[in-house]
Length: 97
Image 1 (tube, rainbow, N blue to C red):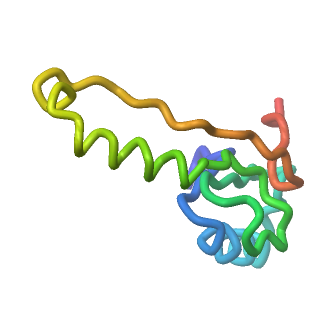
Image 2: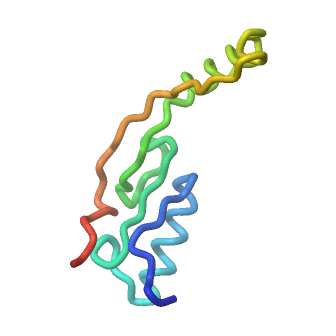
């Protein structure tokens, strides 16, 4: 693809492992040529030391349940924020110039 993407964000860490392996086989260097990140649990099976937007899954579940039970929210929908921590790993870098 031209121009080639400079960053890929995957939902789960498992996908990033497949991605990193396949792009590396194609000669693409991570993170020099392509930054790879995930948003999920950074502490579960992270052999590539991914950069992760770590969702607080417990808080997300709690907010989802609160939203389901909140009659006012059904009448007047409003966003509910979930805490996210940034875990800097070794799979992202600033874009090349």
